[in-house]
Length: 314
Image (cartoon, rainbow, N blue to C red; front, side):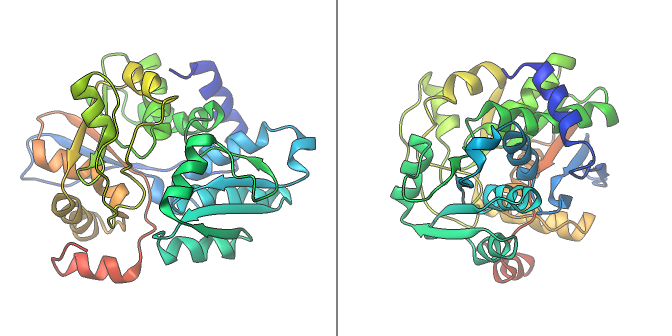
């Protein structure tokens, strides 16, 4: 768990630099419980990643930052680091897998970041090793940096400010930095609230690890849910996720696409695949409870969104 003191400090550090996103109730009369949406897609970069990226960079030694910053990302963390680098006058390189959405790559470049496209295996290696020597700059890890997780944890504090008694909080799981950060904040303030991670079935290593009691590689399939799902739980994240979370769910691509449609049609919210995972889970299980769904981002290619809105699954 991330210390609550670090999360409160991150909140003060980020005040005035990020959007304090709303928590809104999704009107679903057919559902037995109340579903709330934490709209992180409304951040300046369209994703929660700005919180962790900025919190980490603001705490990095100025001398280290002279060479710039580097991260590995499917797109959203790259935007967060590029945004922070632009604000602070730093150079920025973002290592991306070859399947990264063009929408996210274009956004990184608009923010002044340099995109370095590599194979998925090389990209995963950079994340696993927390390094990419081919680019100059200090490496800001997208997941397992505790400063990143503390920044993400500020979402949990905001949720409890707006809804003091949620029964469940559902969080998309890519590497675990978002879910561990939010769970650390929520559990420290309201231990009775359950926090669950959600993954796509096409790459659900945490769900499998919790079932087996230990992490093992799983089969991973690239999909439109590019911000979540992976072939393995990072070793450094396994004890944190196991200790902070109450469990994990895996949902299908069809369920995720359906949740993207519900968000667009019922709430006028544009969500990317990962951003709809939490709602997909809530719609499947229909709990008679107060359920908070983290809409982690809204950076989806227009073509894929169009497919989903006409009833298809990309």
